[in-house]
Image 1 (tube, rainbow, N blue to C red):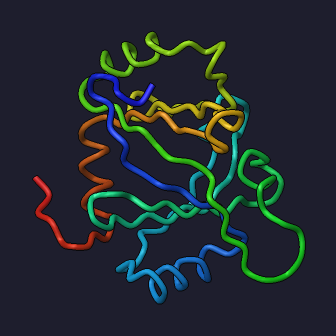
Image 2: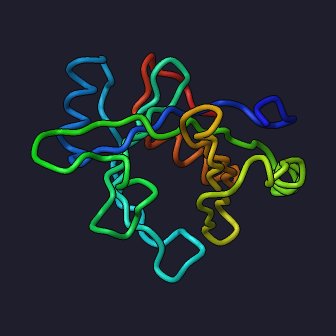
Length: 170
């Protein structure tokens, strides 16, 4: 599942109950140069979908994602967080990005045995974004996100995401 054509590890993701405090902790403790933050609403296949605050930073070629679920709209993300006060940051998933045209995404999807790698959540944003999470908890202890972004959307995300060391976006 990991060594597929046009697929590469690209992200390590954490969920948190306070994205601003988590971003500050990553900046202070792990030298992350700041996070591009936005709210992602309704990209799931169900009506409305999850509501999430998302922060992205790229360090050493790997994207770090922080996710704060909003309300009870995203149990896949919220359920790993403890109840109670205080900042919580919990590892959630790694991501595999499929590069190139949408046909590469279709080939990636066709190559996966979903009986062995069941989908826990999936979604899309028009013709710009496709993703699903496979539940690998029995083997790996976490989810794996599979994601494809249209090349122009990916370029825009790269340009908006703080990066260390700085790299030129082509």
